[in-house]
Amino acid sequence: MRRWGPALLAQVLGWMLALALAGTPGPGLAGVLPQALLAALFAAVASLLLGEPRWRAWMQAAFALAAGLGSRSDWPAWVWGLALLTSLLVFGGGLTGQRAPLYLTQQRAL
Image (cartoon, rainbow, N blue to C red; front, side):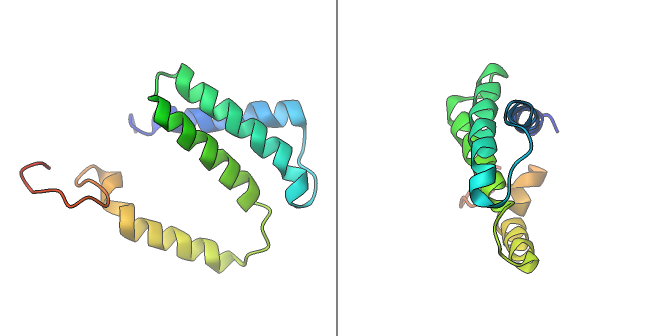
């Protein structure tokens, strides 16, 4: 959890500040866009303040924006389940720390 702690904290802080400043999102994509942009900005800044590398701030911003806009899409629920399953199949070993995700790493390096 140590590795995921700052990232999760940055997202939570980003969304809490965005919702506190911009209020409840309106209907549709245009309604959630201001909150998503604010959450992206706040999550990136929080990531930097928590001592994370600069490249992770860009990832924090992209994730907050994608989560906000994705929450208002009209896609069926099975599409999100398929995306989760695909992500777990591709990146699943990297979450346990037993292998590097998506890299052809020699056994000695692991």
